[in-house]
Length: 109
Length: 111
Image (cartoon, rainbow over all chains, first blue to last red; front, side, top):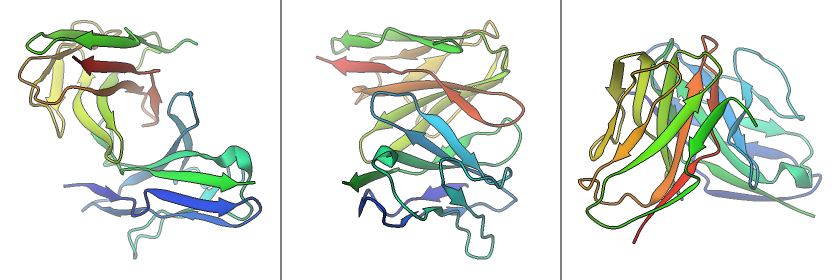
């Protein structure tokens, strides 16, 4: 069974402070990991995926297979980063995609 | 605002009634998904379909039914057997890249 755990329901940081949203997973094979974001009154959308190994809006995430983690990081938080963030796992192909419970990021001005 | 269209945006249902939520896509994606979003519980998979005329149960399929007669359409019926149907329902599709594209959602409230 595949499982995604996001331990924090709410993360509050001050503008300019570093951000780390935690994500741990369990899966027996080689998963594909994603971060999705939902801004207020907008659709849920992809932020980044581990295969791309790119930085989007200043966010990065590294897949750590030893720790089965895929934490999302940003060195300096901006107010526009305030949103709901979901970590997701795909077991491959058109398989079911499992989401974590989400973390609400609140950036305080 | 193209890609995936969900309707209606808001829906009210009396207890004991079945309701159907529509999901239409023009992305030519093979796979389609239905998720339920509840505060504090994230997104939970109800059903998914990889190809036309085929679909699989997700983690919380009880009380729901789907059909996939056309590639573009994947309607979800919330039956009277669903004990707690009040929720926000999200439809999504994915291409071979495995990236989900979401609709705007439908909010169902049981009166």
